[in-house]
Length: 417
Ligand SMILES: *Cc1c(COP(=O)(O)O)cnc(C)c1O
Image 1 (tube, rainbow, N blue to C red):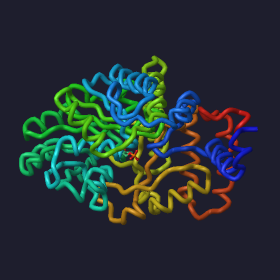
Image 2 (cartoon, protein in one colour):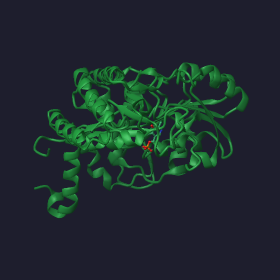
Image 3 (cartoon, rainbow, N blue to C red):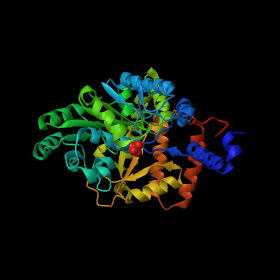
Image 4 (tube, protein in one colour):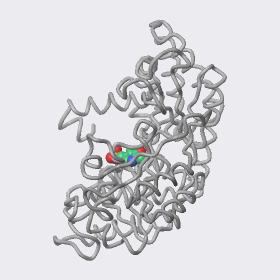
């Protein structure tokens, strides 16, 4: 019996139910993934007990000889993985990483350009209800109405006009490749810094399946728990000139003691991402997304921009005559976990949305391939064609649970499942 089930059966039972949920459903939220057993072990380690305000070699408290080792390992592995001059592994999330990145580079009131939030930008790229929109003057760029792809000429014109201090590239719901080289040119032309938020695609960058921002961006922020498959957390990487400003902005600027247990998990995840298998993993994520996209289109769904270059797909649910919210809820009833999303120039509110965002990172982590994506697409289409059909939902839920059980979830042993 585990310590948790002995000491706290109530929480142990909830955790067990969540484990079963993860085993029996198809996780298609594009920002989610499964950390390995090794990452989970490091993240659940005794480092959770330690305060280590400061940085390796410069801590405010005693007893940090091993904190220094684990944080240094995480930094060195991230540097080996992405090749940026400077790495700060202390941000506790992607949002914290972005906050510190802004703190390191701009002042309240300064102008920043980011992708329109309804078109795939993140909350921390200028939402009026987020600190970013309250502190800074965000000027949104947009995707082209026809192609639904970012129009770099329009971005350049807007940058010349609005003279931002920082341009943010990197999104939460954009299915196409981002041309960081073109963004670097636009930023240079406008006298702005380029900040790449590669939260969603970090694993593809690590594996070589998306253009790397290294050598192009002044500043790179990321989460560590999405395609990168690490613990929940964030990271900032920067050119040497920004190193000191970044470190100060993280601590003491925006955070207190670092989460060393997460940093230990990050070190393990970066180690895994440095292995040759991770390249294959990144390749399969993209292959699976392409296979899923093709099958969904054949099933009658319109995809924003017509397809995908990365790990995610944004389906236009108008092509099924339903809203994104309705699609999300119907699929949840069938054991397929996704999220509603706005689509470019959406006429529905963000809470309802016309889009459905689907990602392949988690299914790929379970070992599924293009053949499985066709089965998954068939289930999705079946449910979306009859979103009110209780019978269809229930049939698909049972089929999905049986199918899903055949693909082990990393980090969950057979005995636990
Ligand atoms: C997920 C995400 C974030 C925020 O990450 P959290 O860890 O949830 O705070 C920031 N930017 C982008 C582009 C993201 O996709």
